[in-house]
Image 1 (cartoon, one colour):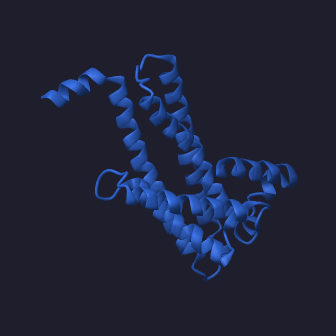
Image 2 (cartoon, rainbow, N blue to C red):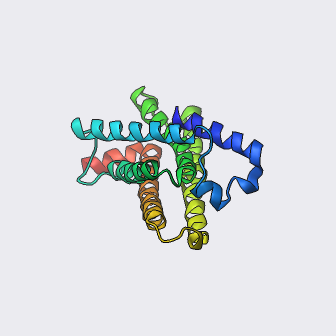
Length: 202
């Protein structure tokens, strides 16, 4: 739901203000687009519930799962931004990455449904969309937001907003790297299931 709201907000602002004004520092830092605050509140609530659900039912692997760190970074940044009512629009831009989450969840549903043949058109199409949205919606968007933050650093002043934003984006970019590695491993496993079976037996 929040993803559709983000797309609606960005398209609406693009049509009203154009591509130049929508990325102005004054818009991203101090402004709040229509529905942006409510969308961020909803997203914050979703991440908080999802975090609690995974911790309560132990729906994660490893000591420090990247998904829990991802949610923690977002919750800290979102909560402070909502409390101080600043950088709301910046954080709306970061939610573009949730477009890739559709295909991450879609892959899990597809595998639960028993569709695992790497040669099938469905699996091939899903992987193409998975990689495409990973590169464009997650990697590219977060790198561009980080570059924008660094470029506009002198305009932020002496508050905590810039350090928090830079640390948050550094964390997100690092987590994206780990996610990309995990995604590549999953892709290789699906492409060579027999090799994985032999390795497991050995």
